Image (tube, rainbow, N blue to C red; front, top):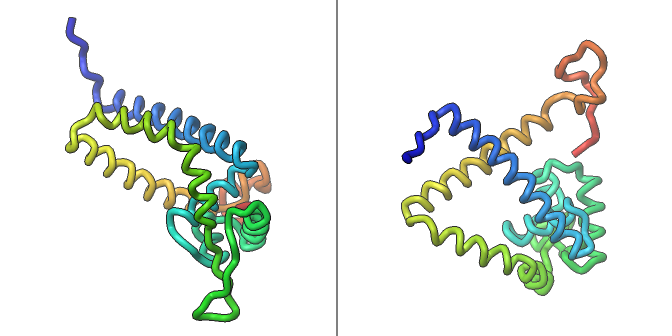
Length: 179
């Protein structure tokens, strides 16, 4: 018995639902990693950014994450105290500090991903190189869209629960302070 291929609308709906489930599973996995490391989720992802993108200033990290500079200072303080990052003087500007991830801790974190990496390698083995190229393109473009959507949300008015009556998403001139 042959199965009818879903139409484009059904496929897009299924992809949206699948994306939501994958997003939740990803967040829950990273929360489990953060728990194992004794970190909160935001701190875990900030150290991940430093490992993947390299050393940067606190201001650069704040801009990448959308967190305030005050919040990032707290993140860096906690990560430094836990031994995941260190502050170094910027060799090009004595007034600035560079935040660098500690390589030894990177290896420790990496071991927590070994099982997932093996599972994902097995999954990738089911697809041709051409299919993996399409999947990778979709992943890259999805990340770009997520970053753009996050920037848009941060540029909008206060969180929905804190809006003044009658503003319906318009800027009220009051910064939310959330990041």
